Length: 308
Image (cartoon, rainbow, N blue to C red; front, top):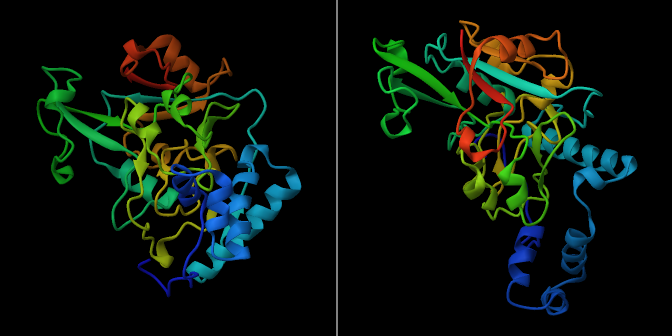
């Protein structure tokens, strides 16, 4: 980490991820026997016995949350809260983005980084803004993700932000071999970072390039850490797991807009409840020219592009 002293680690630890790799070439019993101490054997067995977060009892969830609050508070030297906010009843979140308004300023990118505790070094971005030619339309072959955001918008160009599309039929969920990612009742596709084994199958399955792997230990300066975190959302992630946009679950389940919506200087981003006939998102879908990215794949995104 770039801040503070690193936490002391045992000379040899057994994680669920390393345990699964170990099992690839031998039977579980032999792998357990190979552990050098009773403590390691216990950790190995626990990694398979513990169910993922959505299947834990309320008591076990609270215990796990307290564990991470204590660990993060010690690591960053200031109080950190971890919540497990349940989905609201009769809510299905949807997102809409007005391509005709977006100016490519990338403020959404960096607001997302700050809100969701993404690594600063190496940098991890959950939103990618593509610059495209107006006369070519949405053409990924000629898209430029490295344009100069200090001089936008450029004549003859339009800007096309891409992030998790929160699919109704998410291929990433189907591809996960350990059930570490799933779709919540409010439509948000989440990841249990403690359960992810880092195989990256979900990354291969995602047609939008919306999932990101932590090749190194993520670096978040203590003075930049967002201390209000959600277990399935913006809590700090370890090395070796996949992460992605969660519609700012820590905000939206508490009645706020996602950070990218709130920061957009031109009002190009809209967010709301698809089940509410009076919501702005429903009005847009029913009255605007809607474009669904890679519609032919039939993943049924809940992220819609439109022309104002």
